[in-house]
Length: 148
Image 1 (cartoon, rainbow, N blue to C red):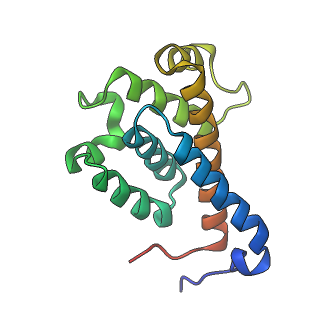
Image 2 (image 1 turned 90 degrees about the vertical axis):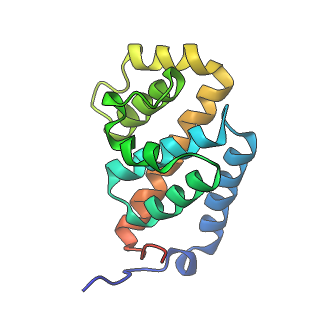
Image 3 (image 1 turned 135 degrees about the horizontal axis):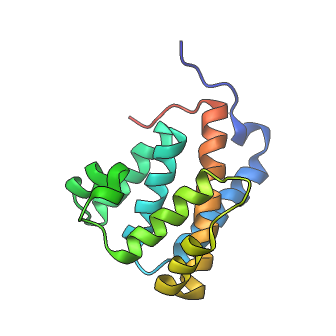
């Protein structure tokens, strides 16, 4: 039986409020494209296996006008021709940060993302990926139910 383990917002409402505010700030400061942000967030949640955020973020991506076909091919983006060079660099960085190895993110992946995104967007991307990983891990540990 799948049950929620703990209601984090009940235990620490102030911390949850701050996390939500941080997510809001990162969305307001935005990346080049809101769809890029959602693609990256979905890919992180795919890797982490977080159904709660996969559902929410997929709906948001489609609401922003992206296609179901790109959403279907996202897990195999390296073999798909549907993603731009900028999206590929962002997705590569997201994977490296999510599957973080002891050597960290490679200079090649970081450099490509920096070249295509610029420092402002790269900084927002790094913070977005970091927060997404934290949120996924909190939801998975607390066993939050995916939205219906």
